Image: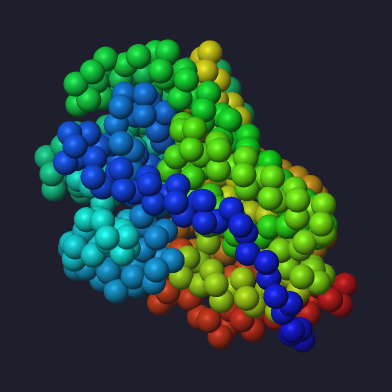
Length: 410
C-alpha cells in the first residue's frame, strides 16, 4: 500500500540551527580552558538558575539523544552494564556512561574534545530516579557536588503547597551553587534569564502548533531535531532568534500549501520517547504511507509557560512540576485526548520504550481508556530510545503498515 514519495522540501532554517548549536557546543567544550565553570543539568532542571550564576550549562540527556541518533549507543551500553549498571535501566544513562568509559562521543565529530567535566551536577527527579543515579556516578568519579530537587510523581493538581515545597528546594540550591560559581546570585539577572526562557518556550509552542494546520508543515520527526535550542539554549537570546526564524518559515509554508508529508492522508499522534537510531527510517516509512506524525507528548515537554520573571523560584517550581511525565494518569489521559482533538489525528502510536518505563504510557490500560472515549485507533510499538537491540525493524514496519491499513478502512 506504499505510494511514491514526492520530493520533500528541507527547512531553510536548519543551517542556522546547526550554526547555533555548533556555537553552543564550541563554547561549552572550550569553556573550562577559559576559566568558565560547567554545571551539568537534567533536561527539565533549573537551567535558568545556573545560567544566571554564569555557568556553562550542559545537558547529558541531549548527549544521550545524540548517542542514540548516531547509533553509537548500542556498542557503548555494554560497557556501562559491565560496570554494574543494569541493561534494564535508562539507556540514555548507560550509553552516556559507556561513552565516558570509552572516551568516545559524537561531539568529537565536531572536532571538539567531548563533554566537559562537571564542576557541579544539578538534577530534578521530575522525570525519574535514574537522572539522580546517573549524576551521582559522575560526582563520585570527579569528587564534585551533586545537588538537586526531588519532585513528587503522579501529580494531579499542581497546588500551592507543592509549588512552595519545590520552590523551597530550588532556592536552597542557591548557596551551594554560589560557592561553586564563586559569585553571588544576581536576582535581576535571574529574572532576565527566566524572561528569555519564557519567550523561547512560547515561540517553541507556536512552532509545534503550526502542525494543527492541514496539511501540516512539520512532523514529529522534524520536531525532535528542531527542539535542540529549546533544550540546551533556553534562557538565551539565540534560542529566541532561531525560533522566530523557524516560525516565519513555517507560516510561509502554510501560506504556500507546502506539506511536510506531500499528499498527507492520515495524521498520527506519537506518545512516548523517540527511537533515536531509527528516526530516518520511520520518517521515510510514514512518508511512503502518506501519513504525517503531526504531534507528540515528547516535543511538547519543553513548553514552560508558567515561567514568570516576577516570581522566579515559584514559577520555576510550577513550570517544572507541570510536565507530562510526572503527572497522574488522569491528567495524562486528559492531555492526550485534548492533543488528539487539537491536531485532528486519526490514530495514536504509543512507543513502549523498554528502558524508559517513566515515559512509556501504554502499560496500565491508558490506550484502551482513551480509545473507549475517543474511538481513535492505536498502535503500541515496542522498542527503546537508544538500545536498538530492543527494536525489531521488520516487526515494527509490518505493524505500522497494518495500522495505516486499518485507518484506511475507517
